[in-house]
Image 1 (tube, rainbow, N blue to C red):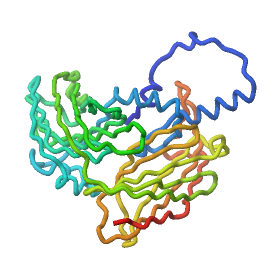
Image 2 (image 1 turned 45 degrees about the horizontal axis):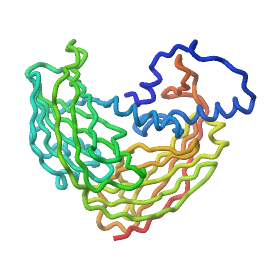
Image 3 (image 1 turned 90 degrees about the vertical axis):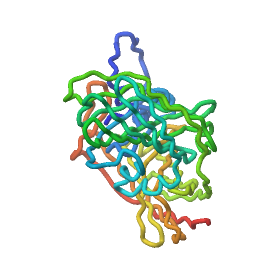
Image 4 (image 1 turned 180 degrees about the horizontal axis):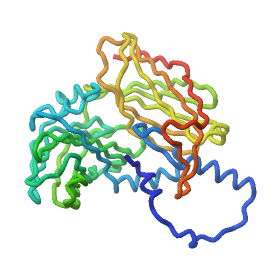
Length: 363
């Protein structure tokens, strides 16, 4: 699966259109450091690069061009009902259906009927489930393109993921998650008018047909779930890495953890890739499944993240956050000039944990 930066890297450019000029050694070092900060991948991708502020503005715009999608197979799945449960093998979406709104809005075009079933909005992300029934064979692994938009708002959708599960002959169920970048990049949106226009449905390559472009548009208005916000602002640091938990937002079906990651200049210069994960458990011993919602950067050394976790155990009184850091060197440079590291690489790496960050849960 490619993220938006990999798509941009695939663009062919005519290097002859640029003029070369003399630069000092100090300028060369500055450019090298900036290049190390240009590429960022979301956590579902194995290796992640620090994002620079300049590249974020490109990434946000380009993200609207790409709807990432993958397909799995599921047997004997009902076409209506708790579709969130079908995508909750790790428990992350187990409590979403009871807090969702049922729409049952259908649109048909080119012999393909799409029905929007359940939707929910937590103030930072929009979750939608739907069914697809087709008169033609779409194959085992069709894909969907299209990015939701939030209307009449300074906020914007900056990341969209589609997942499809095959349910039978020419039948599929799907879930789309769209993450918002708010005006101040921190606060949630209380309500929104949304439009989700599916641009095309792409049959599996084994079927041998082209993308089917049609008109499957859905418009609806949602209020955010009732959330409780807790300011934390507690840090842990070691070896040139500082992680600060800024706040926790508790929703009826999940909790969101906002945290910052800051790297020293020495780390940025020495290592090609830096990955910071977080493990969250409570004082009862429960370890919480999470999804990284992406992040943004306003400097070459800092990233602001948001992760969504499964529903909090009501008996828990503390959250224990353990940042896990990986430093990695690249294996080489590809034809586009981007550095890369292979799965199973023998290149240098370091891995360590920061001190636990303890959060007293406010109820």
